[in-house]
Amino acid sequence: MIEYKGYIGQVEFDDEAEIFHGEVINLRDVVTFQGATVHELREAFRDSVDDYLEFCAERGEAPEKPYSGKFVVRVEPELHKAVAMHAKLEHKSLNAWVHDTLELATR
Image (cartoon, rainbow, N blue to C red; front, side, top):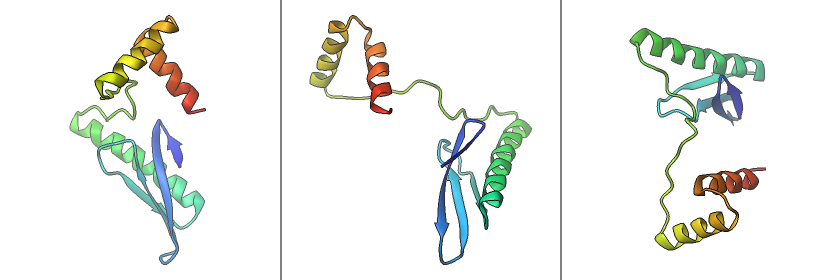
Protein backbone atom coordinates (compact mmCIF):
# COMPACT_ATOMS: atom_id res chain seq x y z
CA MET A 1 0.00 0.00 0.00
CA ILE A 2 1.05 3.58 -0.57
CA GLU A 3 -0.22 6.84 0.95
CA TYR A 4 -0.52 10.42 -0.25
CA LYS A 5 -2.48 13.28 1.35
CA GLY A 6 -4.24 10.77 3.61
CA TYR A 7 -5.44 8.64 0.70
CA ILE A 8 -4.31 5.02 0.58
CA GLY A 9 -3.63 3.12 -2.61
CA GLN A 10 -3.62 -0.66 -2.81
CA VAL A 11 -1.30 -1.97 -5.48
CA GLU A 12 -1.19 -5.22 -7.43
CA PHE A 13 1.13 -6.44 -10.13
CA ASP A 14 -0.31 -7.91 -13.32
CA ASP A 15 2.35 -10.40 -14.38
CA GLU A 16 0.73 -11.02 -17.76
CA ALA A 17 0.56 -7.31 -18.69
CA GLU A 18 3.77 -6.57 -16.75
CA ILE A 19 2.28 -3.49 -15.10
CA PHE A 20 1.46 -2.30 -11.62
CA HIS A 21 -2.11 -1.11 -11.08
CA GLY A 22 -3.88 0.16 -8.07
CA GLU A 23 -6.93 1.79 -6.59
CA VAL A 24 -7.49 4.31 -3.82
CA ILE A 25 -9.20 2.15 -1.22
CA ASN A 26 -10.43 4.68 1.31
CA LEU A 27 -12.94 6.42 -0.97
CA ARG A 28 -16.39 5.51 -2.21
CA ASP A 29 -15.45 7.03 -5.58
CA VAL A 30 -13.36 4.88 -7.90
CA VAL A 31 -9.87 6.35 -8.35
CA THR A 32 -7.34 4.13 -10.11
CA PHE A 33 -3.74 4.43 -11.29
CA GLN A 34 -1.08 2.35 -13.01
CA GLY A 35 2.59 2.35 -13.93
CA ALA A 36 5.26 0.11 -15.44
CA THR A 37 7.79 0.96 -12.71
CA VAL A 38 7.53 1.79 -9.04
CA HIS A 39 8.44 5.40 -9.85
CA GLU A 40 5.69 5.61 -12.51
CA LEU A 41 3.22 3.98 -10.15
CA ARG A 42 3.91 6.45 -7.32
CA GLU A 43 3.67 9.38 -9.72
CA ALA A 44 0.41 8.08 -11.22
CA PHE A 45 -1.03 7.58 -7.72
CA ARG A 46 -0.20 11.15 -6.69
CA ASP A 47 -1.55 12.48 -10.00
CA SER A 48 -4.79 10.53 -9.56
CA VAL A 49 -5.33 11.86 -6.04
CA ASP A 50 -4.57 15.41 -7.18
CA ASP A 51 -6.95 14.98 -10.15
CA TYR A 52 -9.66 13.77 -7.77
CA LEU A 53 -9.17 16.80 -5.51
CA GLU A 54 -9.20 19.19 -8.51
CA PHE A 55 -12.34 17.53 -9.89
CA CYS A 56 -14.10 18.04 -6.56
CA ALA A 57 -12.99 21.68 -6.44
CA GLU A 58 -14.23 22.31 -9.99
CA ARG A 59 -17.64 20.91 -9.08
CA GLY A 60 -17.73 22.91 -5.84
CA GLU A 61 -17.92 19.72 -3.80
CA ALA A 62 -15.90 18.90 -0.73
CA PRO A 63 -13.66 15.91 -1.40
CA GLU A 64 -14.46 12.83 0.59
CA LYS A 65 -12.25 12.72 3.66
CA PRO A 66 -10.36 9.45 3.93
CA TYR A 67 -11.43 8.96 7.56
CA SER A 68 -13.57 11.10 9.80
CA GLY A 69 -12.57 9.47 13.08
CA LYS A 70 -16.11 8.18 13.61
CA PHE A 71 -17.69 4.86 12.81
CA VAL A 72 -20.71 2.90 13.98
CA VAL A 73 -20.39 -0.67 15.16
CA ARG A 74 -23.43 -2.85 15.62
CA VAL A 75 -23.12 -5.74 18.05
CA GLU A 76 -25.52 -8.01 19.85
CA PRO A 77 -26.86 -6.68 23.19
CA GLU A 78 -24.86 -9.13 25.31
CA LEU A 79 -21.56 -8.01 23.77
CA HIS A 80 -22.60 -4.38 24.20
CA LYS A 81 -23.26 -5.08 27.89
CA ALA A 82 -19.93 -6.90 28.34
CA VAL A 83 -17.95 -4.10 26.67
CA ALA A 84 -19.75 -1.46 28.76
CA MET A 85 -18.92 -3.40 31.93
CA HIS A 86 -15.23 -3.65 30.97
CA ALA A 87 -15.17 0.09 30.37
CA LYS A 88 -16.81 0.80 33.76
CA LEU A 89 -14.36 -1.50 35.55
CA GLU A 90 -11.46 0.45 34.01
CA HIS A 91 -13.12 3.80 34.88
CA LYS A 92 -13.34 4.76 31.22
CA SER A 93 -16.11 5.87 28.93
CA LEU A 94 -17.26 3.29 26.43
CA ASN A 95 -15.70 5.37 23.66
CA ALA A 96 -12.33 5.62 25.48
CA TRP A 97 -12.30 1.88 26.21
CA VAL A 98 -13.07 0.94 22.60
CA HIS A 99 -10.45 3.43 21.36
CA ASP A 100 -7.76 2.01 23.66
CA THR A 101 -8.68 -1.59 22.83
CA LEU A 102 -8.59 -0.96 19.09
CA GLU A 103 -5.29 0.89 19.41
CA LEU A 104 -3.77 -2.09 21.24
CA ALA A 105 -5.14 -4.52 18.66
CA THR A 106 -3.58 -2.65 15.74
CA ARG A 107 -0.05 -2.32 17.08
